[in-house]
Length: 391
Image (cartoon, rainbow, N blue to C red):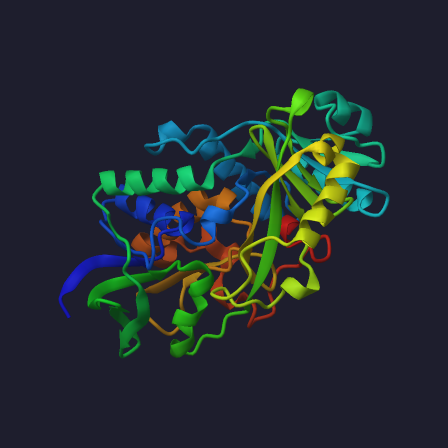
């Protein structure tokens, strides 16, 4: 094999390209290999929500830091991530209010920017929503959303400007090792040598580690959503509403709203990432219409402009696995993003780049995402039952 790069990164989604960007910022010129094209996997299907409320305070602090980066993007990277400060609301009813209040009180003590408001105050912020059945609402006024595709391409442009190379249409079919050390990757166009390999291949990443003896606790779930066009006086951006009370979400897309379910239907668990149904059915659209009618009545008179189903590569504790891979020197992974890590991509990329370059001395910032936490009984608790988006 001819050595092609000091570092090979598998996957050109937002996580892989954030890692590449932060390595390049520190003088390493990585080679990113993508089986299709930039942002062709799970990243492009993301809702793009940027929020800070998490049940795990360490995760919340990472999300806070990443939000700060999105808000000051041009100070760090080239391009435009399409950040829009529309605010984020989390609704609660009698069953979920105590947990929400306790969670918010803890995070306020850590200095995070959020508040508990009532239904009247929430309606004053945006009268297009009906909050009468909500007993408490967490409001993050400075949060919002970004464009996942624009963000990923901005990372790509930044990485390239610093000397990184991105090869599309180059599928990695295996990771090559020798004597407990990574030596390169096998691709659809031959073998490439590398001193360091990072598996950031999203839903297709665990299969690359399986031949090395690692069966990661990651499963795949389908998440359909409908895009509804609003009209008349209901046009324009609105806050992101993560409706814990009714297990729904409402994400603005200009004069349209993306409507979906926070949790996962039983029939959408354990799906094949290469063979799952990518469309949205009539029954699913009707389910979202019912949710919309309840929370944002104007959507009931809107036009269905489309829909699709994304896929989550969920770890069993809804936190990613970002670490060195045990047993193989030079091999790292960033997997199991659980439909939850677009918002943390700047921090995940920076922290893993530091870990790769600085070694064990930089391991602490990734302690939350350590590889062996499942084996040693230190997996994180999932909050709000099956609503992993809020874990």
